[in-house]
Each structure stands twice: as C-alpha cells, then as structure tokens.
Image 1 (cartoon, rainbow, N blue to C red):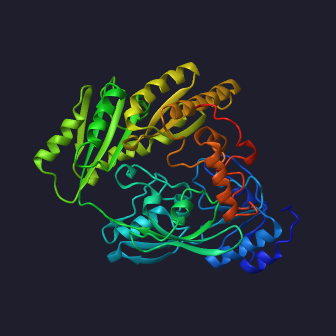
Image 2: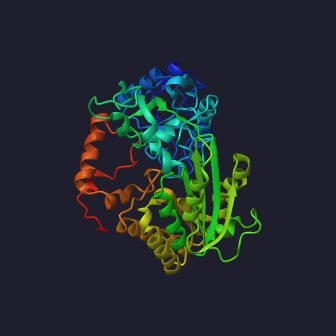
Image 3: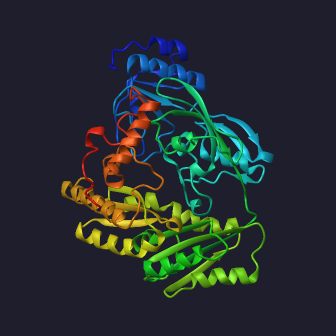
Length: 469
C-alpha cells in the first residue's frame, strides 16, 4: 500500500478520531520499547472484533500491512510497522467481558492491561499467573503475542499455560474462535497454544478466555547473598528439588548488586550473587518444612540471609529488583537487553563464561532475572555515542547467543523475537522446522500482511546452515 491509498472506507467505518493519518499520531505509534521507529500510513483504533474484521478485509483488498499493537512495551520491535500500512491499536478494546470466579475464568478484550486483570481477579482471591514487570502498561494481547512470563513462571508457567481460548481474526479477515472453557480437552489441533507467542503474525487477537488461580494466603520471601554465582546456583538447584515448589527465584549478579546498594544499605561487601526467593502456601509452613527450605539456602558461600514474612515486608525487597532496569542507565547510554534461557544446571557455566565474554569484548555485562527456570536478562551496557563500543556490544551479543545455544538453551524466554532476533532464528531452529512455520503462516495469512518482517526469517535464508551447531 502506498501513502496515497484511499482510506475513506476506514474513516467511514471508524470515524476520523479512530482512523488517524496525521504525522503526529503516526509517529507516536511507529515505535515501541525497542527504540526502533518506522512510520505507518495510518493508525486505527477498533473497539470490537467486527471492526478488526472489517479493517483486515480492507487491508487484504489494498494489500496493506497490518501491525497489531497494545501499548508498545515490547522490547524486540515486534510492534514497529517496518512495512508501513496500518497500525491496529487495541487500546480501546479494554473491557473485561465476563468474570466467573466460581469457574476461575475471566474473558477480556485484548487491550485490557495485565494489571486490570489482576485487580479484577484479586477481588475474589484469584490471580492470573503471568506477571511481567510491565504489568501496569502491558496489554493482554501483548502478553499473548510474546507468551509473556515474569518472576512467578517458575511455579505457574507462562501465558501459554493460562489461556484457554481466543477470539481472533486471520489474514483474510475471517473471525474464528479457538479453545474451550474447561481445563481439559482433546478436540484436535491446539490452535490456542499455536497463536500464543506468534507475535501477531498469524492472527489479531480480539479477546481471550483466561484460567485463573487461587492466590495463596501465606508467603515467605528470602533475600540471600552468596560469594559467587556458582554457590548461589547450588542453593537454587536444591530448592527446586525439594517438595515445596518456590513460586519465584530471582537472581542478581555482582554488577546488579552494586546498582542497588544505594537503595538497600547494609549489603555485605564482596557478594557476587543474590537470590530473591518466594515461597507461597495455603497454610503456615510447618517448622520442619521451613527448616528444610532454609537448609537449601544455607549452602557454602552464604553471606547474608533476610526473611520477610508478610507482603508489606517483602515489598522493599521486590522494589530493589524492579529498579534494576532504569538503574542500568547510570553505566552507559546504550543498552542491549536480551532474555535468554539455559538449563538451570548450566547456570554456573553460563555465568562464568559470560564474565569472560564481557572482558573479551570490553563491554559491561549486568545479569539478573528469573533464575528459577534459567531465564536471565543479560544487559550489555555501552556508550551509544562511541561507534567502536557499539560494535563491540553487537559482537558480544552474538557471542552470548552462541554460548546459550552451546549450552542447550533458548535465545528468548519471554520477550519474543520481533525484529531484533529474527535472523537468529536460523541459529536456533533447523531449516525444516522453519519451513513448516512458514507454511503455517501462509495458511493463516496467505497474503503475508499480518505483522510482516517479524519473528520468522526470510524464506530465502532458510537453506543457510546453522553457524552454531
């Protein structure tokens, strides 16, 4: 679609306030948290699945790209309109359609924020397990698009584990529904789980049926510091192999600890690893169970242990963890934030080799994240105005991916692929798997209009050999 395409039919459908072509609006909706920018030809604001259907039908007639967008918190460029066309903002689709606490279900439009879902569910002692740090401004559609997780994924799983069904529109403009309202079914291909994590390349999600979970009544939170990441990992593995499953195990390396020292005075000097461990239960822990947990934490290398026995006491501990991302700006004007996953038993080797990579490429590396399932945020920090430093960080990033794959890991745990990791899908998956994905894409989106240029590599690149394996 070129800039001169007649969009009068869209304006007639939505009205001038919900079909915007002015430069200011197009600029505002042309970027996300990846800091990449591309200008769309127009931004549309549907309020129902029927309007999404009409928009996609119009786009198919005019061969216009269609890029779904929530509130733009994505970090990989998945909502940047690199092919122009239409940005379909779901922010006005922000209604909770049904709340059935006795069935532990909630049905919501895709523009509802994660935080709004949690507040509604919380009125009846329930919650929706995915809990990204961007919950106040990340939408349900975005969570579904990237299969979002968060700290509590170690116990409860990710978005894919808690979406029972969807209402969506495919690339032809066909409305369809997937899934069920029960927690068990055996009725053919699981299209719901296929669409979760597809980053808007298969369909535009209009609403979702979510499985809720009762919120535990008791919670212990431990902040534990160790002399080394290796010693912290031994405690982590011991925790995962005892009968009471942790609901969260967060990790910070020595560099991350240094960034939070100002906000948490009294941290012991010399600590090179921190674990933030949350244990939830429906009843107070028996003395023997609690002693067993604390024995797991008391591995060699323990330097300090603090326990919070109420949510109020735990608040400052979590606040320090959530303050890390903005604190990184103190180290450099440029930051590459990657979320990678390795098997938990490989964490010591990964963290050790990561330090060596930082030295080799002269790039500061700060690592923290969801160590309970091996999902760490590796932050490469550099001077964005220094071309040589920027190039060193780029090469360090590639070295990190090679290391992850050599350790049987995954290049994305919860942020998705988007633009930034698209080429590296050739490193992660074999050509046959990627070809099958391309064929599935063509079934849902035969014209290739839904979020083009994202997630899957260009088909002409598929014969390339994997440079890692």
